[in-house]
Length: 443
Ligand code: GUN
Ligand code: ZN
Image 1 (tube, rainbow, N blue to C red):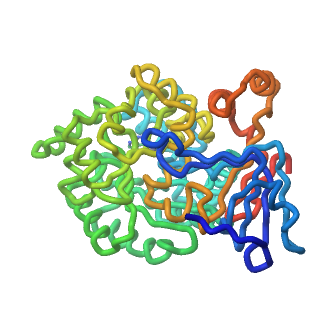
Image 2 (image 1 turned 180 degrees about the vertical axis):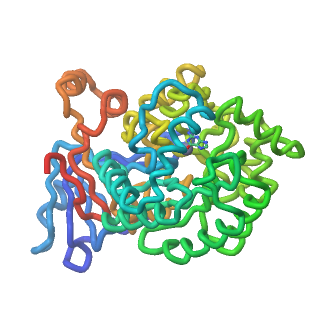
Image 3 (image 1 turned 90 degrees about the vertical axis):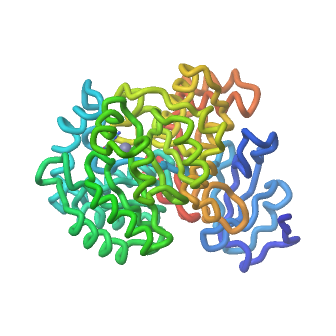
């Protein structure tokens, strides 16, 4: 039970936010009262952390002198969105026409990633990417850099200068990629060890061991990934699995002794808490049971899966096994930085599969559910007391169309659904990171 103080003083409050508030305290699949909503709420912060969330009418007159008040009355505040899988170097190749995964990688992705040997270029795109995060209300991302260590330095530096929470790592690939983008098992071990020393648990940064996908890593390199995880218990691991049928067939040829694509990773010790795999479309029941039992998470990438024609992710199959799932943009196969637009496409993927995605479940997947997938729900994902106060201020009438639709919406769920179907970065009025406003529309 939360103990609400009877008065506020400078020891308990330095900043207050007045707005409508929505956040999740549980998975709406399992609990009917999974979300908390305040029509006119007041969130009290101290040093960037949530102290309490209460009704504004009762508390607004009790703010101590000298505390900052952000008055967002009429706007909806939610926890900052969390993107569980994306590629910052692909920002500049988003919307490249017409191919499926393996050809798309060769024709567009690898040439784009070659440019990140140039540190200045990496800095420029990393800054652009972090600005896009803020503009879209995203305050935490799990990000692939490129094979170049400097590309990792660039994204951590840019994220740190905005105080964004970041999971990121150097892409590892020692085969089936252009020479200029290849490392070796040994060099990747050295480079990753150095990057872990530099960035892991530095501020809000977390290092992720990042083998691109099984076809690009030799067994020796996948072994290195397992070694790094063993040497550093809090580390993340991110990769891709079972995205595209031709990719799945290729993995079966490359690893004939493995039962399945997921089993390749499993055999090198790469499943477990803080392991996140993008896509997970072409899995079987044994794979899903293994993901659930090991605590491995799925990054659901709907815009990317539609764009590359990869297939329809089954949210119901993941639900049936209680696997952790977070939503993800997967830029630049994904077609939007906006997690609102990503939820729009997630809804349609579920429709095509004959499944349901309610607006409450959708926003859970972009906030607390994503935080649970990253095992960061003790720090972010909702407004529980003590959490880091990352939040997005949403204007639900940002366009004429949205205003027209909202006038005809009578329940919170109806408004949330229209928000995720029609909303994008135009709806983001402001983004705060640990209480501090880092983005304000029009400024
Ligand atoms: N599989 C291996 N690399 C990639 C990538 O960059 N994007 C996507 N969508 N899938 C991949
Ligand atoms: Zn990806």
